[in-house]
Amino acid sequence: MAEVMSTLDFGELAAEVLTMLVAAEPDACLAVDARQLWSDDTRHHVRIFARVFLNEVGERVVGGVAYDCGLVDEELVGPGTVGDVVASSVAPPRTWTAIVDLSTLETLHWHGPSPDSIAWKFDGADSRPRVHPDDDATVEALASATRKNSAEHASAAVRFRHPDGGYARHTVTCRPIVLEQRTGGLPKLALVTLTDARQAKKPGQG
Image (cartoon, rainbow, N blue to C red; front, top):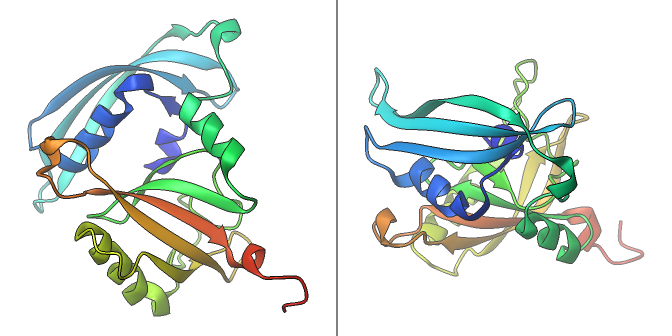
């Protein structure tokens, strides 16, 4: 999901789109315009039609189609959304911020640059879990505390799959995001900050 979302700019409708992804009831529909960055570095106007439905095993799925409406005038396009520009400007070195679905723990969107120390993109040839198995309980405790608006597990050390093999330790801080009352009043999204643990070490530490 994050790979697709990283190419799309929904502007002021971003909150509505995220609400649908995490909270809309089956058969809910959404039609929205966006700008999309293509693999050839051109930006296009796209019109997206999406619907929430239940698959054959009862899982909630969001599906849809997108129509290309033509190239965007590049002279009017900045380097990204205002929020992404701000995020990339104020974040400390080796620190990244993401919006995460608390029910599936899937990354929906990188707010600013994406990390180069985590293999977050889908890779069918890499069967390693994205989180080190020994840290699964830590991640679930962090997510559970965030769902309950508890500060008990606001921060934790988690090992994520590294693109070059093995796992890299990161400090993870999690804060709830409440998208109006349409989500039932309980947080279904989280703003997650990840810091490369090597960045946090002081000079002289191993």
